[in-house]
Length: 164
Image (tube, rainbow, N blue to C red; front, side):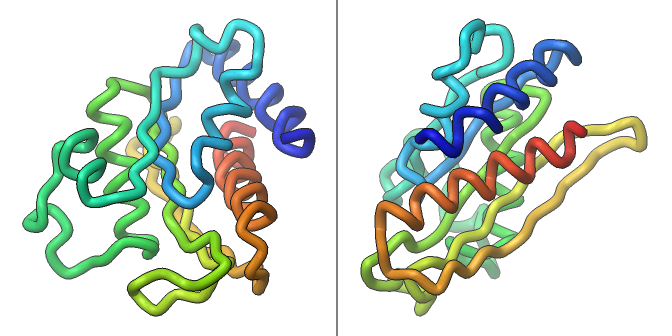
């Protein structure tokens, strides 16, 4: 958590200064993205909420999505991460939607991705209009806890970079 807190503090300050909010959809990071943001004083000014979308039950129940919504894509990919970022942003009426989806380990996921694989995405608007960005991280590690921390850091870094 210690490595996440300074980054989350900067994000919180930037969001507050801009009058913007963020909503989170995370899976393999297990809530660390949200925990880092919520550790900031005044988080209620910028944090809309989150879902840990770790199972199909959460996908359907919290995100309100079904199989037809992910036609042609699967979890732990950039297109899926962008969809989830868009969806959580819309459902929680936030300025930004941030998603993390991957395989923390020690084994890979059911889709064939190795431990240490994650995709992060951000959905929102900047001065030029709608903005969606995503990227893939491969840590090469099978250490579940370290991967969770790195996944959360990468997601926060993506948001931080866009807000800069």
